[in-house]
Length: 392
Image (cartoon, rainbow, N blue to C red; front, side, top):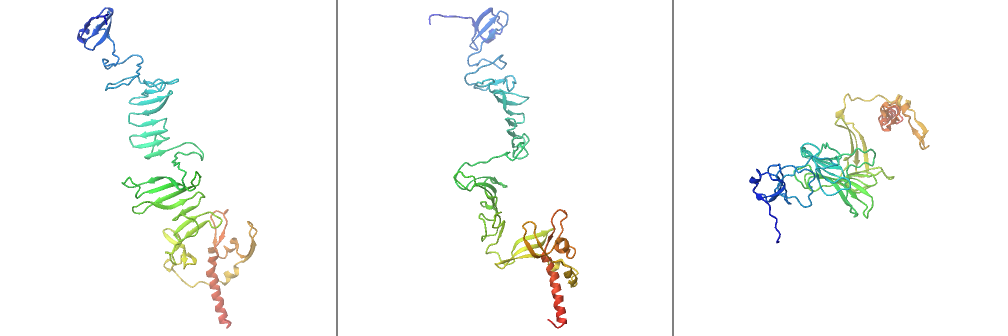
């Protein structure tokens, strides 16, 4: 290179006391950069190197455009900015460039297309897309659709109507019995042992829409097993996974024409074992029990230990004569009943056999079994009279 351009130069210290002529350029030999003078400013104005290695902390007026990477441990400070005019802009945009800005004290935000997408506040809380996802850093909670989660994961929607779905858990497999579920593990282990599970099960397979809701629990450790299920027909199965009569203790609500409710015993159950118990105030007042292997008993509590002032009952002849046995036709299906009672008539003779609802608009009912003791008493009285007359 035969042509040379030589400029005056000196150290940074020497430049600090030097005032160059207007339009004069000198070389700072310490920083290895050029210094432009205006004839008045002491030290002149140093020019920045391409890699900015000689730029100290301070403000760079205007816009700083960087096409490569910014590396190192230096701090870049920019104006706070807004969602539409970010402090640090990244990439390109049709109207607004995506970037980073500070919406408030100790807050950092990211925006795209002039809209705030993510905000981190001074407490470490993270808000994405206006509460679409919110992280409560202080309480270690996550909110979906809410900035005030009250549980570890809190999903909320404010949309009215039955189509509102705040949470969807999906398994896209089309195989039969494909399941997707939620595990509840109230123990110190992260495994599924000693847990409870609710599964949605594809009972159809092949892309069908049949879905069962199965409930799994366990007792004292081990893997959970299915204890109850609501199938796609709306049938409720407790203690079994099949419908109908079966050799297992189970309760089934089928809602079918054959039977709405099944209560099953197994061969391990014996006579006297209850199908149903009825209680009041912590005490039993009735039951339905197994009788042998072919029948059931409908029991009303009658234990002597529950009674006092036990005496022979009065004769029932007058009451029996007052009973009005009727025949009538039912309005609902026009069927004819040859022998029966009318509740409003029977209540005046045997109120213990009539159900009288508190709401007068509800229908009254009759328990015919309550009349049996009265009939037995009358039969006994009749036999005694016949015996006394020498007829029996």
